Image (tube, rainbow, N blue to C red; front, side, top):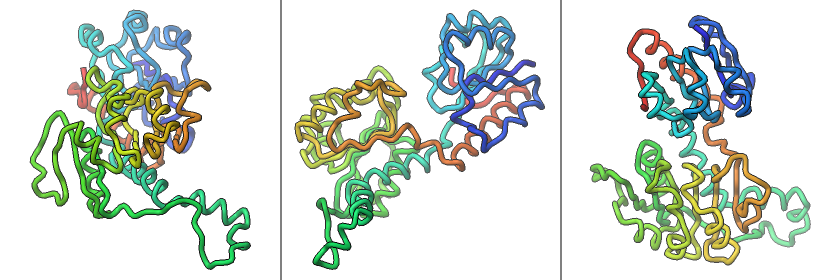
Length: 318
């Protein structure tokens, strides 16, 4: 059995191990695979492991031996799952491995805006506290999360974990989801409409999947409904947000700030309008990148391999 890992570097830059794969066959691990190298590297592959390297119909047609595709991600739009299903090739993803880590980054963004730790730490390093006539100072307004309203768009595992943390901060939670479940046990929680969530939230965090209904969900019309003092957090998928509309809202002072771990194109081009937008904190898609999180990903990948070789694939998404 020939196993090819097309883009293993981000999952395992050297602090984890691929050695376990050798129990299943011959293994070739590539840190990255440019588009023009996919066919060459996979022409004899029985199993392909990929994260962001695409497998379209054209690439799949160059893989006559392909029997299984193992994703290194929760999202699966990078592969043509429907065509692989026609070919009888199952595709397994890695579900729910990053729930805790993504929720943690959401609150890293929230506290970055309310406590301004980096801003004040740099001011102290620059000597401003040494020169201060008072025992303390602040360079930007500071605020508490308690009593603020958090709007959550998408209420799956990650959205619910974010709501749990919001409760610990005594926040009010509004949520929008395609499927409303019983949340009567939650305090200060309410299902609502997208319009009401936009109008009433002090912070809005996105946890919805990317599909035809959610692409550019946060557009100029949505942003026009938001408070000028509101902050937008996106740790879901970049194309859920209209980048130009968000940049315009930030630059024109119609939104207080944004915290983004994902962008419509990754890595972004230098002319991406959000890279220069006011009060916009951008991290390079790192919510999933903690070692513990990647270890959990690798553990699920091993489970997926074991199930496939046992004849009963799990976490199949096509």
